Image (cartoon, rainbow, N blue to C red):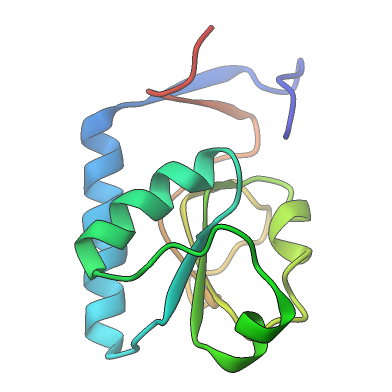
Amino acid sequence: MVEKTKKHIKTLNFTYKDFIKSINYIVKKIKESGKKYDYIYGIPRGGLIVALYLSHRLNIPILTQPDEEIVFENNLLIVDDIQDTNKTLSEYENFRWDKAVLISKMKGFKRDSKVITKRIVSDNIWVKFFWEVD
């Protein structure tokens, strides 16, 4: 979990409306790809919310705990709310999982990356999701 620092000079209030637009975009991209997933795994905490919505929209069961047998024998989609430093998603690089996030803040992030994302923002922006408390 990334902490807010002095480098974050602006705040983006990511509303429920923004969230639904991003979910719709990810659903569209997955459907266009024709790829079928056996499970979806949401990285705790924010990724759990994303996983729940995508699970309902795509009719994919949620995987609550990744274990080796499931990881290596199934097509999996891993999701998170934000790709900030890439530290969290990099923990899953050794798996053949596809990935999706609502927002990416990575320097040098490219649209042709294997991570599906709707929105890319500057590193100096603090993102506050509608489900977060002050």
